[in-house]
Image 1 (cartoon, rainbow, N blue to C red):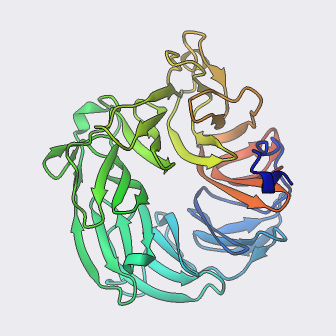
Image 2: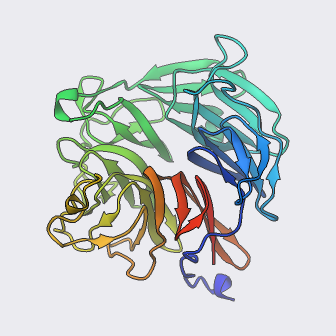
Length: 381
């Protein structure tokens, strides 16, 4: 009745379900039917008590109906400590898996199409190292986000073009920033790209850029993101974009029209690395432990020194996960605590079910609300 009437459901429980877990960071999710694909940098699927379920290589699949592990994923980057799956996108009944991993030949690498129901490899592509993937079935295309945006023909695997190159000014930041497109969202003929960038081609750009489906950059749309800001994750409604950013560390709303000025911004004590829409709210994940609940709040920097996390006593404690309304109001009641390694939450996937909603979370955490649950967790209504 609630679903039929369109009433908003509550955010899920703060206690994680008893599900399998991983032995390394989960970076991305994609769902096809009842199969949930998980990508990252890991080699094992385990029970919560640590019992080994299976040896894998950067990809695992779970049955959403039962929660059970499915032994169907290809092994990508097996034997390499540096390989990583960074994004998975859905193309019909296939998943497109992108990142930094070797393929069967020197011209088959970093991007592969896989049957999402059986795990069979459909096609390899010859891609640069990728941070993001975007499926465009209506165009017959696959977009890969690396230092440039590259388009491939899905059917033949041919590279169509590579355009809109990103560059960064390393002097603006205290840590090295890898240039490139971290997340891609499409709205008709527009591709919105969260990026590590100070320029696209020779034009000024920052954190979030507007491209077209042929790789053209709209240089008149420049995101307000501060000198050191860079984009990590973006999601959208019909009229607005919501960006999770590092460098200056924030979550913000940008109207699609106009020139890139923010409608609102909320500070976080570390990068906001994932932004998704769930139950009519924004759910964010990252390596923050304090977040702003008012526009002017200053939440400090994510360090090992607690005095730097909320130096002015203005922010609210949220360990890796938080929820905001579309107008920027912090949810006062939802506060699941992630603890573990530095980056905490890297990926979020809201899932609608017949009885409510579930939230899948991936990252570098090892406990959720004090319960052992390593690198992957699921929260249910």
